[in-house]
Image 1 (cartoon, rainbow, N blue to C red):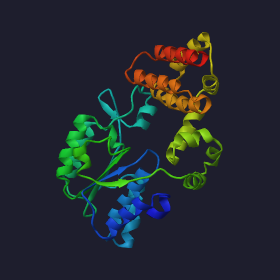
Image 2: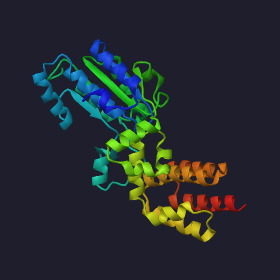
Image 3: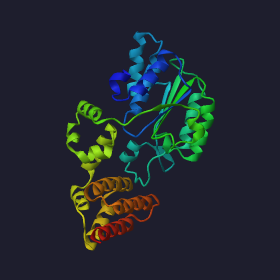
Image 4: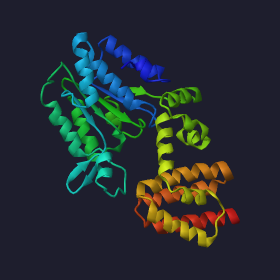
Amino acid sequence: MQFSSALLGQTQAVELLTQSILRQRLAPAYLFHGTDGIGKSLAARCFIESILCADVPKSKQALIEQKLRQGNHPDVLWVAPTYSHQGKLLSAAEATAAGVKRKAPPQIRIEQIREIGQFLSRPPLLGSKAVIAIEQAHTMAEGAANALLKTLEEPGKATIIAIASSVESLLPTIVSRCQQVSFQRLDRASMVEILTKLGKVEILARPEILGLAQGSPGAAIAIWEQLAAMPTDLLERLTKLPISRRQGLILATEIDRELESLEQLWLVDYLQYIYWQKYRVPQLIETLEQTRSHLLAYVQPRLVWECTLLKIGSQLNS
């Protein structure tokens, strides 16, 4: 998998990573940072493949690529955020399959950082180097972050790739031990090219999706899928303001009944964008920001939405 063909619009990042391979100057740790959905994880996979295939005969590279695609390469550990449920750590997909109620986003947990330490305690099995990728590293709790710091100080024969939404989302002590690789939001032409390649041309006809995605193809696809999963009638009524007091109370009940916690947080983002495009009233955005804070603080969701919708109604009617 070639960087240049897989990662459109990320010329600077591609050049930096390619040169580090060609010149055999791998850093012990990298920090891939930038908004979600712009190719950081894909870049990490391309980079890992390049690291493991460097100085390996072509006859053996196919086996390495196959193991990476299947996710069973013994010298690669891919760490992703998890939910803690009944003493077990579940990935987002596993939590969905198990029907786990998710009130908060998943996290990188200290148990997973300890697993990295155990992984690094043994020598590489197939090559000369092991590689660890930590997806959404910004979700680490304080204990996990401190544990990772100790690992970064002595990575041994390994390269660690932390993938995060921003530099500011991580402890400065972690950032200082990583070589930073910045990923940029894409321009419209690159967005069009990528979404067309992926067969998602229908997204291009939805300006609100492109506006919400803000230069992130991954975000555009996620928003498209989330919209398709939302109750259409509920979404239409929420976007038609102003609403009466009675309508607000009914809508609040429906939101609480039909949407999970994470879907409600997504709805806040969506409504902020839609209301700003329609009304340009700053107070609406501020009210929804308060809604987000209350939902994250686990205030009873129906009460939160009742207060939100009644307040929005009064703001538009005043």
